[in-house]
Image (cartoon, rainbow over all chains, first blue to last red; front, side):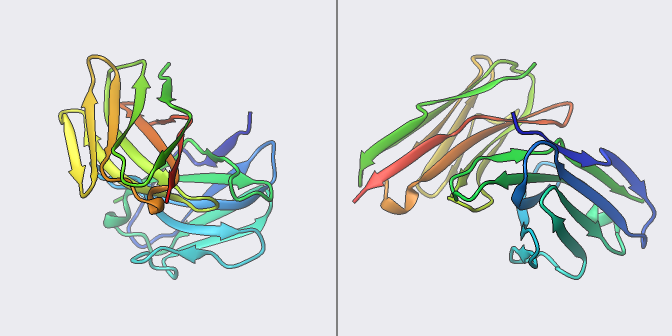
Length: 117
Length: 111
């Protein structure tokens, strides 16, 4: 089956620093990748959709200048949390979708837990 | 190892019907359970979140129940509409913070 990995699985950083999270599709080419986050006791919420080679589409309320998404290749998307603050502490999870059909299944990564001190 | 199943895999109903989607999980020690809808080519849209201490949640025409002891959750959709056509995913989150996704139920509501 299709596998999606994320790195790192956990990260602790100081307030004001930037953190990069990688999402890789290991055995398929992901034309589209999605980024989600989940705050404690809240639902997993979609942050943005990225298509390889084009700019990401952000959901309402998500700051595109704060959460930089790069999908430069068909197997890698990165999410950079710039100038992180404690309120950015959350669980970030990516998913990847391959193929040309819109109905293609999404495969989810294991997630990255970010703690900003 | 947590496993999540959903029944039925696909469902087609005429507009206006009330319907129930089922989700089963093997390990009752869950942190929470969420229901999402997935439209073709789009990211997941959160519908309802049920914490492990809760038994049900309601939002508009949607009602989700949780019975941890039996390892089941149901999503009830009242007065279905063509706009409800999508794939509905049940997602279990364990105390180890990992998510386990069900395979989904593909719903078609016919006008």
